[in-house]
Image (cartoon, helix red, strand yellow):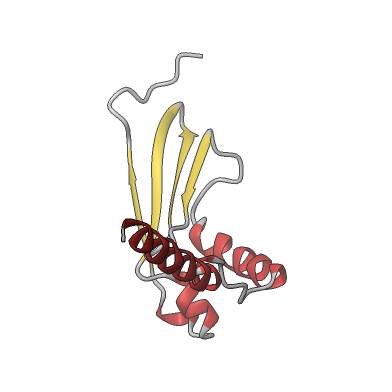
Length: 118
């Protein structure tokens, strides 16, 4: 009787694992050209107001929320941290060809120790 339960359990687990195989593979709905076009369109919007040669720059492109970037720049012998955040996800509006609804939220600040001693 114990062998029958083990056999049934193994059969059910094998069938359920085999049936889930199609759902574990990522969907391939986008082509590299679309992603390249998205990045080429996103970065000029996200980097608006940034220097061409920053000390450091960080960009965050999450899957399900808005994009964000900040730049550490040296101006007038001081460091500035400049950040840009988009009001909504650029991907969803870019893909729907409705980029005008995306607004850039711009902020800047001086760090506490921002003078350059070099």
